[in-house]
Amino acid sequence: MQPPIMLNGRRTHVFRADRLQIRREQIGLSRREFSKRVGLQEANYGRFELGNSEPSPIVLVRIAKLLGCSTDWLLGATDRPDVLQE
Image 1 (spheres, rainbow, N blue to C red):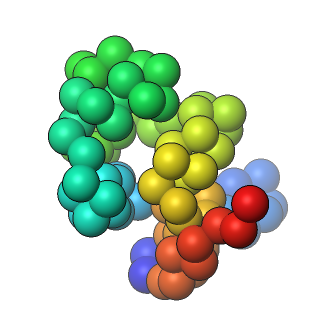
Image 2: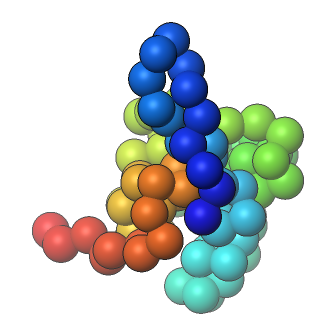
Protein backbone atom coordinates (compact mmCIF):
# COMPACT_ATOMS: atom_id res chain seq x y z
CA MET A 1 0.00 0.00 0.00
CA GLN A 2 1.28 3.45 -0.84
CA PRO A 3 1.66 5.75 2.15
CA PRO A 4 -0.80 8.62 2.50
CA ILE A 5 0.30 12.09 1.47
CA MET A 6 -0.56 15.39 3.11
CA LEU A 7 -2.75 17.80 1.16
CA ASN A 8 -3.96 21.01 2.81
CA GLY A 9 -3.12 19.55 6.20
CA ARG A 10 -5.16 16.39 5.56
CA ARG A 11 -4.02 12.86 4.94
CA THR A 12 -5.02 11.62 1.51
CA HIS A 13 -4.09 8.71 -0.71
CA VAL A 14 -2.92 8.44 -4.29
CA PHE A 15 -5.02 6.84 -7.02
CA ARG A 16 -3.73 3.31 -7.69
CA ALA A 17 -3.77 2.97 -11.48
CA ASP A 18 -2.15 -0.45 -11.27
CA ARG A 19 -5.26 -1.90 -9.65
CA LEU A 20 -7.57 -0.96 -12.52
CA GLN A 21 -6.17 -3.33 -15.13
CA ILE A 22 -5.77 -6.17 -12.64
CA ARG A 23 -9.38 -5.94 -11.46
CA ARG A 24 -10.79 -5.32 -14.96
CA GLU A 25 -9.07 -8.45 -16.24
CA GLN A 26 -10.33 -10.41 -13.21
CA ILE A 27 -13.91 -9.64 -14.20
CA GLY A 28 -13.16 -10.55 -17.83
CA LEU A 29 -13.69 -7.26 -19.63
CA SER A 30 -11.57 -5.74 -22.35
CA ARG A 31 -10.46 -2.14 -21.98
CA ARG A 32 -12.87 -1.19 -24.76
CA GLU A 33 -15.88 -2.92 -23.16
CA PHE A 34 -15.08 -1.60 -19.70
CA SER A 35 -14.65 1.99 -20.87
CA LYS A 36 -17.96 1.75 -22.74
CA ARG A 37 -19.76 0.51 -19.60
CA VAL A 38 -18.23 3.31 -17.53
CA GLY A 39 -19.29 5.84 -20.16
CA LEU A 40 -15.83 6.97 -21.26
CA GLN A 41 -13.88 6.96 -24.47
CA GLU A 42 -11.38 4.10 -24.49
CA ALA A 43 -8.42 6.50 -24.79
CA ASN A 44 -9.54 8.45 -21.70
CA TYR A 45 -9.99 5.29 -19.65
CA GLY A 46 -6.62 4.04 -20.90
CA ARG A 47 -4.97 7.11 -19.38
CA PHE A 48 -6.31 6.03 -15.99
CA GLU A 49 -4.83 2.54 -16.33
CA LEU A 50 -1.49 3.98 -17.42
CA GLY A 51 -1.46 6.42 -14.50
CA ASN A 52 -1.36 9.45 -16.79
CA SER A 53 -4.65 10.81 -15.47
CA GLU A 54 -6.98 10.32 -12.51
CA PRO A 55 -10.75 9.97 -12.67
CA SER A 56 -13.06 12.55 -11.18
CA PRO A 57 -14.83 11.51 -7.97
CA ILE A 58 -18.02 10.70 -9.92
CA VAL A 59 -16.16 8.54 -12.43
CA LEU A 60 -14.18 6.90 -9.63
CA VAL A 61 -17.44 5.78 -8.01
CA ARG A 62 -18.74 4.39 -11.33
CA ILE A 63 -15.49 2.51 -11.87
CA ALA A 64 -15.55 1.06 -8.35
CA LYS A 65 -19.16 -0.12 -8.74
CA LEU A 66 -18.41 -1.79 -12.05
CA LEU A 67 -15.26 -3.41 -10.66
CA GLY A 68 -17.08 -4.51 -7.50
CA CYS A 69 -14.57 -2.87 -5.20
CA SER A 70 -14.35 0.11 -2.89
CA THR A 71 -13.09 3.54 -3.86
CA ASP A 72 -10.75 3.28 -0.86
CA TRP A 73 -9.03 0.31 -2.50
CA LEU A 74 -8.65 2.24 -5.77
CA LEU A 75 -7.21 5.17 -3.84
CA GLY A 76 -4.72 3.00 -1.98
CA ALA A 77 -6.31 3.65 1.42
CA THR A 78 -6.69 -0.10 1.99
CA ASP A 79 -5.24 -3.30 0.63
CA ARG A 80 -8.62 -5.05 0.75
CA PRO A 81 -10.87 -4.52 -2.28
CA ASP A 82 -13.98 -5.09 -0.14
CA VAL A 83 -16.54 -6.05 -2.73
CA LEU A 84 -19.50 -3.69 -2.54
CA GLN A 85 -22.88 -4.97 -1.44
CA GLU A 86 -25.98 -3.64 -3.23
